[in-house]
Length: 213
Image (cartoon, rainbow, N blue to C red; front, side, top):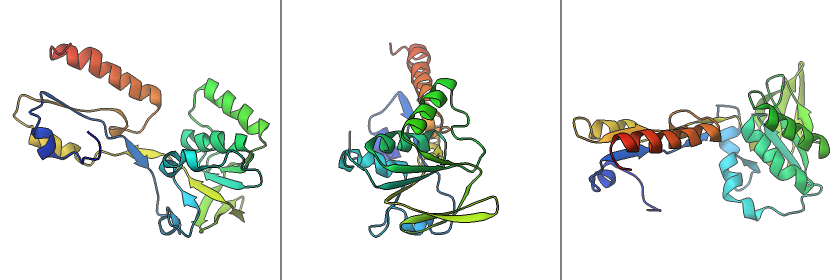
């Protein structure tokens, strides 16, 4: 069912034997000056990863001359780089830590380094975001401050679990003969392989144990 909010009432109406909460994750948006004021506003050019995904087909194939600034050098930020750099955009990626792609597997790191080298992505490490403007980021490194203007600015500081009705769902089925599970990013934001493993565990173990396969 699409276009329907999941509530305890709608779920209970199906008289389920098994309820699986897999509501995923949402972007982490810390209280940085100007971030919440400019994010997703019509008169600003600041976006999160969900905005990009929702408008993938709207971006021109040729972005030559356009400036893209990405805050966050983890997997999410690198996804943005991988999308925009081959389209000719001038891409800058900013990371607070000393390395971009920290925690990624060796294969992904190697592939992304090749991509960034090929498309001359400007990498800024040990650099902190201090302020978000409608069309620029203000960053700081080595005691210096710099303004990064952009046509598209993305804040990709990671993801966090999103499980708005999980506790309510647990309480609703307490004492009933109903299995209630929380899986995937709605437990903790992780990688795709972890989500696949959670789904596999559900199918091979939980459904077998309940006699549904």
